[in-house]
Image (cartoon, rainbow, N blue to C red):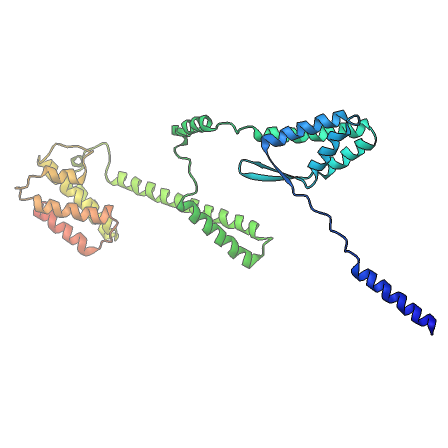
Length: 324
């Protein structure tokens, strides 16, 4: 019983001792030091000098280690850089305990590298005003006037090509879309070439027929107007109403030219013939109607028929072109 009471008493005493014992004090934190760029390089020079003096002079090393604790902050050109100094503290402590040339050389190299980075950052950026002026002069030359970004037409072409590619991808899959796309493009190119070739062929054929109906070397009156009328009637018999109206018009021009209304000239146009006819002439109205009818049917590709040809013959009779 006494033993139990003694144990309880010892426990209570221990508990009281623990409760009144002071708590461990926290290690105070060291605030980081702030430097300007110039102060930073000066501090690096000071640390280099201290490192070269070790281990002979320990007091500056203790001061350096104390200054290195907490890290550094360097402020330059509106920016703040955090510099870790823990590795320098380790190197200085090693040099305090034992002189090691390798450790000292490594420390000096690291400090020198930090200083070189600071000096490179401190150098002002080269003035680019002169370079920009030269570049603007080059771009102002005539060969660069057409240089520009994508126009609205380029963007439209890109959107159309992208839409076609998506459409081909949907039907043929992404792997086959490029091949099908190239085939589609070459098909469009072939169709365009064929259409252009057909248009050129048709134009040449029409010009050849015009040269046959209207020789370029001889004036209109070289072929007498009854011959023109006979050819017009033959074309009408075949149902070639546009050709018939065209030939009938030149029959009227040949008729007037034979009677001296103007000097023969194979290069004259229908409108020029009309301008040569005096306004007061009794043939002015008939020739104006014939010219208009020729323009809309022959040059304007308007459809013609028997009624249009009969109207042309009526105007020719007003001019005096009456077949016996």
